Amino acid sequence: MRFSPLALAERIIAAADRQHPADAVLRQKLKSERGLAASESAQISAAVFAYFRWLGWLEKGRPILDKIQHALELSAKFARQPQSFSEAELIARSIPAWVNEELNVSAAWARTLQTEPLLWLRARPGQGRAVGKELGHCFPFGTGPLADILRYAGKTDLFCTEAFQAGKFELQDISSQAVGLICAPAAGQTWWDACAGEGGKLLHLSDLMQNRGLIWASDRAAWRLQRLKRRAARARVFNFRVTPWDGGSRLPTKTRFDGILVDAPCSGIGTWQRNPHARWTTTLKDVQELGRLQQELLINVAAALKPGGRLIYAVCTFARTETRHVVEAFERACPNFDRAEFENPLSSGLVREGQVSYWPQQFGGNGMFIAAWRRQ
Image 1 (spheres, one colour):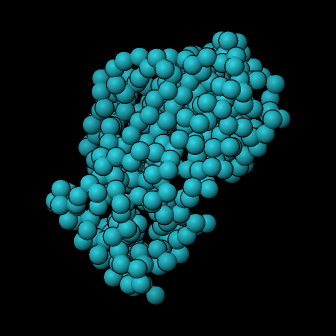
Image 2: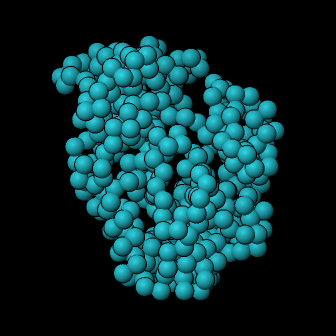
Image 3: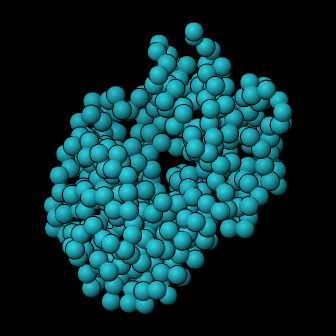
């Protein structure tokens, strides 16, 4: 039986919960439904994300379909008249109340959460101009190396393009690209991507290393490492090894590294513009548990760093428990590490205090916190 786009959106929303994130349910449903036109898939996606983006405005108890219609109306109104929504209203309705315990909520951030996210690409080094010309609808973030950071405004399914299949670019958020640029690994060095996931940042590190040297990639989920291998094969990245690691004190290798990246599991508060469903499933307890895990990860990997080596900590969140408190706990536990200054890749200037936060309203990407240390 064939359903209308909004009826399919209703089914996806009804199936989404804490264990089944809406974006994952959406991908699965769009993949399983045969005969959907691209315009129908886009309509379904827009309806699902609008529902969760505007959930704080929707009347409880109403049928889901009615709430979807109301959410789409609010989205259209916000696009036409964003100033018709007051700052107080946006802060109160777009963000769960518990968040105020963890960070200072600004009206600028709340307003950004209600806008559609931008799509960012990372071209291979020096190929930004050529990739942008081939794909069209691409806008470089800057000049020099920043010309390889491209904002894409087209409608093409990029995964189906010849340029993507040839490994000429990756879909990677601008803030995630900043993490790799702050790592700044050199060709011939040995690095460890300790929470590598499906390998987005590893591919960037390899490009910066000119595919020379060695990167160890670890993760607690074997299926993520398998996806990493497939992505690396398409991108023709070969200077890496994968190994499972549960994050415990028993490290997966005795290798000593020039640099370690801990892109730690986090609450994802910085991604709530792109993933509005997570606003309503993430809890303060999650933040507190993740903060403890992040501290353990940093302390456990510290012993694997060479003297003079650099440790980079990155999380897409702003919660104090996952940022400032983690930094303070690590520095108490590992006094032989000093803050490492670095050039801010997205704006001119030296970050002397060794830590930086990127907010979505600054550069149009996910929120990100990054800290850097050097082992004495």
